[in-house]
Structures are given as structure tokens and as C-alpha cells.
Length: 225
Length: 225
DNA sequence: AATAATTTTTAGACGAGTCTAAAAATTGCA
DNA sequence: TGCAATTTTTAGACTCGTCTAAAAATTATT
Image (tube, rainbow over all chains, first blue to last red; front, side, top):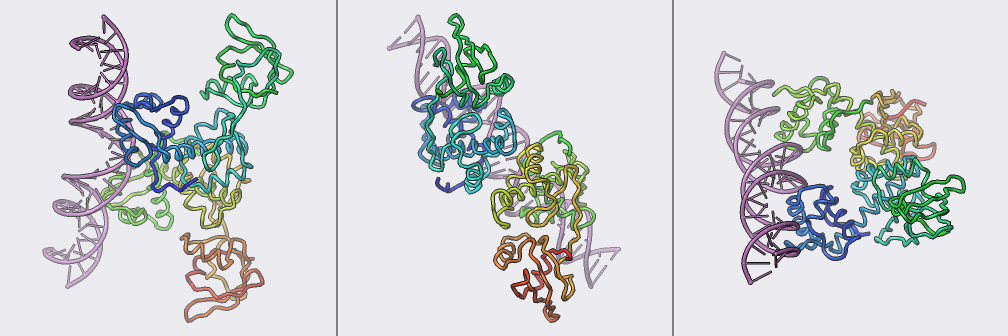
């Protein structure tokens, strides 16, 4: 990971993160409007900011045509993701915060300016590859670990799998998972699929039977056992 | 420690910290000019800010008469000191940063908004009473541990003592201490005092003899053995 | 292809936090 | 006590990040 010549403000960093997130699930350039939606801010504010980010070389911006991350902006965004996920792992592993508590704190901590600090946390945590949500932690060079993950909804009846992540990170969802015991590492046997509403009956950790909706199975990542 | 009704900006927090620091070594009200010097900022900026802090009830401000911390401002400042010193202890104890590296990082980390995070770090560190510089860490209610400390310059010839803190926190000084082995916990025997320039000859950890200037002995806190 | 609907940008304003230069108040001193 | 020196505040300006409302450009539709 390089040292970045001039420091960005927290606001600038948050915009880069949002653009990175949108670029992940959408090819091509990102519209200012979609950034505004993602950041819960006015479109005019986005236009102002993308001009600044363009001037500092973090993004490519063409009026009315949206933006794309430059190589520099992409590296900064990936470093932010790395910092966020390492902090989440620290909070979860070392300070016993719960799955759904870590995000908001990491949102603050990711802006601390020190690569050395992150690298030492990484070492303390023994170089984790995935955060408490099951999301991969990029290494110093921005490389994400591949994982063989599938949405639970893709699995076959009678198959067994292990929960390794979530797609949806909303508090309400994480809370639901916590309460029902659908935790990271839990063993899931798919007992039955109901075609009429795509819900399914599952066996959690060989003990607890439960019916879950498609919304839940769509948003749970598992790996085959 | 209370939960503070409305959140302060980092700038506001830094002003409160500066006022707290100045109040510690000076009775009565604090002049805007001394705040400007402490914060390395223009006096006019201080006037603007103290008006804001006064409006939010953190300080008492009378034009041309300086400021004093309100009970609320005092509690906020002490909480910042607590956060700063707990982060320093974490960085030193758990991440093996050196004495002189921890300050700048803690300066950023102290602004993270979460008392729960600090309390859990406190627990992880086993409720330390002093930070790596030997400064006392206030508890949740803002109470500082008393320590029986004296500047090394106050000790008598032939006395033995242990280094428990520093007064001056400049990088150059901390660096000097690191290099010469004058570390926290080091055993110091005072061999000789030279009246003409107030320098002294000391024995460090029963092994290393060294001459130090008054500037050094003034700024090293020790406890009697 | 012309017009309607939508998206995006511009224009102008605001608050926070900072600055310099000038004015006002306080303090020190003869 | 009155003038000089110092401290402090005011005035006005600037940047960053945000907003709303209006204008301009793009896209969709008939």
C-alpha cells in the first residue's frame, strides 16, 4: 500500500468509499444521482464534491456522464475498506462487541490516518482474511481473498453448509440473525424448500429447526460443507 | 461519566482540552491569547470559538476577561484526557508502539465518539492507572489517581528512585530518553550533583553511569524507592 | 423529430472554522 | 492621572461541505 501524497478529509474519503461500493455492483461510470442516494445527500453537493475529487486526481469526471475511480482513488477506497474491516474484526475479536455493533464504530475508526496502526492491528489479529460479517479483508496491496460463497437460497435440499457471511448489513437484519442463532460459523442443513413462497425449513447446528423467508436465505452467504 | 447531550466537533474538543491543560498549571481565568499560543492559532479565531463554546455552556466567557471551564466543559475535557491516555496505553501495551510514537495517534483516536469503546479498552488493559508517559488516567468520573512523584532534580545525593513519568512530552525529549535508556521503570541512583550548572551524575539500572543536565532532571518524574 | 420527463449542473446562500488588518478595551508606567 | 503599550475583539474575507431553487442538458416518448 502506497503513502498518499495529500490527505483527504473524512467527507472526501466517504465519497470515495461510496463510489467504490457502487462500482462493485455496477459496470461503467457512476451517476452523481446514485452517489447522492447512497450518501443520503443532495445531488448538488455531489456535483461540487466530484469536481474536487476530480481535481485531486482520485476520480475521472465528465459533466453529465458520471464518474469512475482513478487508480489512485481505487487504492484509497480499498485501503478504507481494509481499515474498516480490520477495525471491525478487532472490535469483535478483542473487545467482544456484537456483529451488529461494530459497523458504526468502524465507520469512525476507518478515518484514523496511520497505515502502521492498521498493519499492527492486522498482526495482533493474526492477519484475518474475513471480517465478522464474512466480508473479505483486502491485503496491503488491495487484493481481496476469494471465497467460495453462495447465497443460502442457491443450496439444494438435504445439503449441509456453514454460514460465512451476509449480503445485507442493515442493523435490523443483523439483529434478526443474532436473535435466531444464524451466526457466522453456524451449521445449516436444508430440510425442505417451499415453492409457493420460496421459504425454507432449515436445521441450525444439528439442533434447532427453523423456517426462514427467501429474503433471509438470499442474504445469507454459506460455503458447502 | 455522563452522556453529553450534543456532540462537539473535533475543533471544539481540542479547544476544551487546551483550556483544561492551561487551567491545570494556572489559577483563575485563561486569556484568549494563551489559548491562541497553546493551539498555535490566531487570537481572533480563539475569540470566535470561545463565543461558541460559551453559548453551548462548556465555558464561562467574559469579553476581555478570559474564560474558565464550566462543570460540563471540565467533565468533557477530563473524558478526553481519559480517552487519550487509554488509547496511548493500548498502543504501547498491545501494539508495541514506542513511547514517543503514541501521542500523535492518540490525538486522533481520542475523538472517536463512544464511551463504551473506551470502557472496553480499559477492561482489556486491566484498568491501568497511568499511561506510558507516567501520566495518571482519570476514571469514568474524572478522578485522577494521586501519585507520589517528584522531579528527579528534587532528589538528594545517594538517593535511589524509579522513573514514573515525564513532564515535557516533546518528541525530541522522549527520543533522547529512549536513546539514553531513561525509560519508565528505570532505577536511578543519584551519584553527584554539580552546583555550578545543576547537572547531575546518575547510575541507571545499577549499570550505566551518565551525566544529565538540569533540563532533563527537571522533566523526569520519579518515585522514592 | 419535437416535446415531455428526468437527470445533472449552476447560482446563491449558509455555518463552521480559519485568517489578516484595524479598532477598541485594558493594563502599565511616567 | 493621562498617555503608551499590550491584549482582545470586531470586521471582512476565505475554504469546505452542505443546502434549495432554478437553469441546462440528457433521455424517453409520442
